Length: 195
Image 1 (cartoon, rainbow, N blue to C red):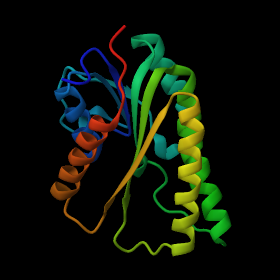
Image 2 (image 1 turned 180 degrees about the vertical axis):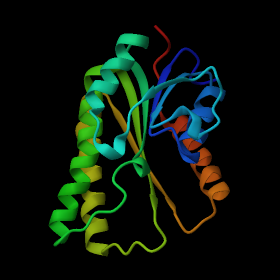
Image 3 (image 1 turned 45 degrees about the vertical axis):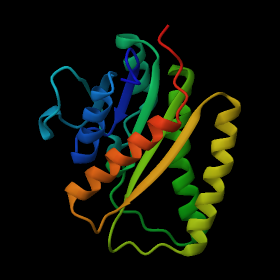
Image 4 (image 1 turned 120 degrees about the vertical axis):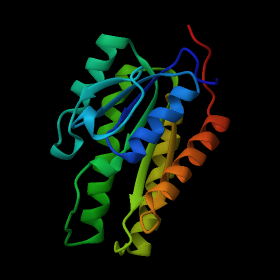
């Protein structure tokens, strides 16, 4: 029970991936707050707490994190299920798409920083849609940005993990992969003892 006594927020917890993450964190002993459009969309343990927030409409993540902090205290881990953000974007250039990706990542992360305990970890999850064609140049640019951003956050004592799944797989396989990635992350993350 690596997360015993820790508070974990699952942003975008009202789909299969978010529900799986919520369950896995609970199994590790964490108190979990999950967010989404409706608690009824998924079956999650009643011991997990729900706060309504629709990431797809751009509801304020800062307001969400502030509400979590007021109700439960600062948190130790944040799991951002980015599949719950905008469904489809159209861009006129690779640079425009890169800026949109960077904005989504930094907005969700930066809004959380004031509400994180020292040594907190943030995980960003994304499913690549099977029909999604992404320029290799864009992938390289995003990877370079993420490496640099991870280093910046590390200087503040925040650990950042990013992982994605192949959307061409069935949901059971994707959920299993998410579980494996979370287990791997928990082996790597340096979680401070409960205070």
